Image (cartoon, rainbow, N blue to C red; front, side):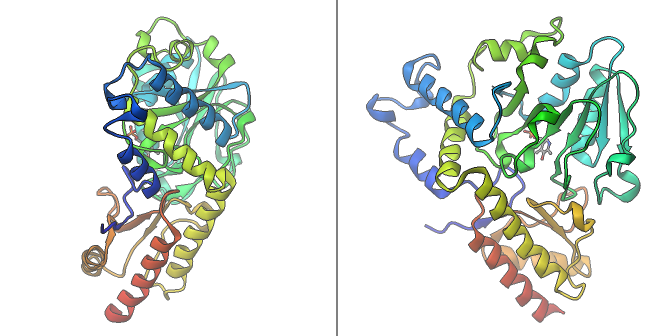
Length: 360
Ligand SMILES: *Cc1c(COP(=O)(O)O)cnc(C)c1O
């Protein structure tokens, strides 16, 4: 077997232990004579898988009792529409921080389904930082402030949670369970599973139960959070394989120290990469304001595009895959989610030094 180091922004690398466990029980699940994918989602086998995944999710993310966890198809993107549909009543507005491409998607879909406005716009700074509290301009009758806690493309994150008068809603897709959340500030936290938690195919949503009870009811049933909660995330056939793999990733996280360990590993892995960038005498450059540097998506440039192209090609030949920046911004990006081993980051740091020495 030749597993490469995969720095993809998502879908992304998963723990090898998890992949091997799933492989071993794939064809004949726990002696049932069939795979989990072939069983009723309401049978005992899958119900146990779903219950365990939900319980572990609440435990590992340290969500208080006022929160429930929901598994919803459509990824983080469908949440962009579900938020205003559920939460914005007549006369209310949703405020958004425009911190980059994903936030812009949430604003666009928010505007299609409700009254939304931009409370701070990072486009003037080319999305290289997050706002200070004093820069966030909220209007009257604002129901929530939506933040993208980590912008996957720009490689920026909120160093601290904003202190504002209204509940926060957070898209945490690309730093899911890599850092604790200040639950008291949030009504809802959501993200696609494929960045840190498992395969693509579902959003994991943590919601304050009391907020779901006051949501709009005059929308399609699948789009109502309260219906997903009442049905235990089985209002319709759930994404069984995604939930099963998610549960396995959570068990892996727990075994390897839980949220605190994930957070400190992310700090040290990203710290090693930023140190390599900052110590390169401006050969490698990170455009992000220091305090807002992401611990998950490390973006950097080389002196020119020709060397960036060469860097990416030689990195792949060395088994360091998917380091190309998002097509909208170019450059390089190393996504170092929870399952990226420290060895992968060390290999990249060594490669960067060798490349600079040969192409300075
Ligand atoms: C990837 C990503 C999304 C989109 O997720 P899907 O599950 O593909 O819909 C949304 N927000 C952020 C911050 C992301 O990184």
